[in-house]
Structures are given as C-alpha cells and as structure tokens.
Length: 391
Image (tube, rainbow, N blue to C red; front, top):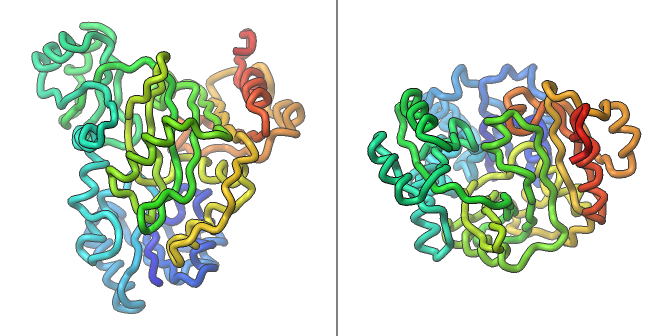
C-alpha cells in the first residue's frame, strides 16, 4: 500500500501516524517544503521516501511529486495530511490521480459553511439560522430577523480565523469597513456550551471509535479575546449527542477518516449543529484519546487503513483534559508548582507551537482522572490568574 502524507512534520505530535503506518507495512511517502535534515528522527526513519517541494502552495510541484511517487511505487492508495488547511489540496490531488477518498466535488460540503448547513438541514439536524450576506443592507435585514448579537464567519475558512461576534450597529459598521473580500456567512448567536462528537470512521463509514469533548468556551472567543483554553472528555457519551453525531457522519459520508463534529448544547438541552471537520481535532487531542483509553489511536488508524479493522477496546476509563495557558496572563500558580501539585493527574505537558498559540495557548497541560471533579478542581487552580480567586 502506498500512502502519501502531505506535510508529515506538522503538527509535530502527529509523527506517530507515519511510524504506525510504516510498521503496518505501508510505504509512507512524504511531501513537504521543509529540508529533509530538519525532519524529526522518527520521520526520517519511517518515511519510505521524502520529496521536498519549494512551495506547498504550488500545485504543479505537488503534481510532479505525486507523479514521481506513482512512477516509482505504483498507484497511490491514500493521500492525506490530517490537517484542515490542506483539505482542498488533498481533494484536488485525489481527483487528478483517482485516489480513494473525498474528491473535489465532495469537499465543498465541508469547506463551505453555507453548503454544510444545507446537508445538516437535509438530515433533519438543527442549525443556527444563517445565510451569506452580500452587503451592509443585507446584513441589517438579517439582523432584523434574528436580532443581535450575530456571528460573522468566512464561508470558506479554517477554525475561527477572521470570525467576529457583532453586538452593536457600530460593530457592524466596523466589520464592513474592514471586511476581507470573501463571502461571509452571518448566523444568529446561539447561547450554549460547545461540545464535540469526535472519532474515527472505518472504510465502510462505520464509527469504530467515538468520544465527546466539552469546552469552557468556543475557539472564536478564545482567539478574539486572547483567553486561555480548557476542554475535557466525557467517559459516557450522552445518548442524544451520539444519535445526532452518528447521523452527521452518515449525512456527510465520512469514511476512513477522523472527524470532529461541533455542536452547541443550549440551556434547555437542545443540540444545535455548529461545524463538521473531516480531520482529527487540533492540538494534542489525538494523544488525549490514548491517555483516556489506554490504547494507541495511531496504531488503530493504521490498522483501519490497511485491514479495515479497529481492534482496541473502547472503555474510556478516564476523563482527559487539556489546559492551555498564555504567556500574557500572570497565573497564581507558577509552572513548577503546577508540575508538583498535580503530579498525580498530569500525564503530559509541553510548549505549544507558535502557529497554534492563539487557540491552544503558549503552554499546554494534559490531565486525566476517573473522576471529573478532580479535573474541574485542577482547572480552577491551574488557570486562576494572579489576584483572582479560582474560577
């Protein structure tokens, strides 16, 4: 089997995908613009071959790279990056080389939020009211329908980039004064807790692993207000969220892929769809799967790709949490005291890559416990700012 991994060096914690695929007997062929000698040792040792391009955004170079691999190794079976930024590029390559996986026509339904909303509605899944807004007058008409605040987000965008919450007429005027020259989707603001239904679907579209994460606040608020970040996994998946999550996987025909499905849980218990992501959740979440379940998600992904099997038992013995601190916030508990005071819960900690810090913080801690109260108590202390009582 020939698996082309686009940008295998980023994020740095994804190198086990390459390792486990290679150990499963796969030819793992890397494409990136990073010099070979700057790759980590695990990548160097486990990539079958590496093709360096000068510019990842030069599609002709990527075509030549895949053509080279095809000539030397035969037909390419998979082409992936596990990174939302490259979803469209992946789809174009799959289309041009007839590689298994989402093609160009299919990927539009997950890259354009307006089209995503249509799929949700066809599947009978509740969504926030919203539409593409063309100009200031159109925005005012929409706000008259749904009221303020509203959320403005690029119809095609990654994460919460260039996403705004508009509270007032002045905010609206400022938005249009600085609006980028792209289509924007306006949505009514939904007051609720952000939750996600995440997991892995096999080659037949069956969900073989799933979990739920609960977020203190959304990524939009985290980025726009430069907040620290906290989310945790549940040991038991709420039945209503699982039902809607499975229906979403089927509606978007997710196969042989990770998925990260975001929803709002409102105060009256309703679940409203927010966004579909056909890739692993960001940051260290894949590693959280391992700590929460005492298995190896990277090995099981390789097992699914090669044999269409997932052999690990999913028992969720632990809640696992991520806490991201930011350097501009003066925390009451210094780093060395975090390591000492929570050594019984702490399973991993590291500085985060600069490109991820807006959402995930400058430094990340991962905790686990069978008891949610332990996680929530630790968060109150670790993320408490100087001069403030624990949250």
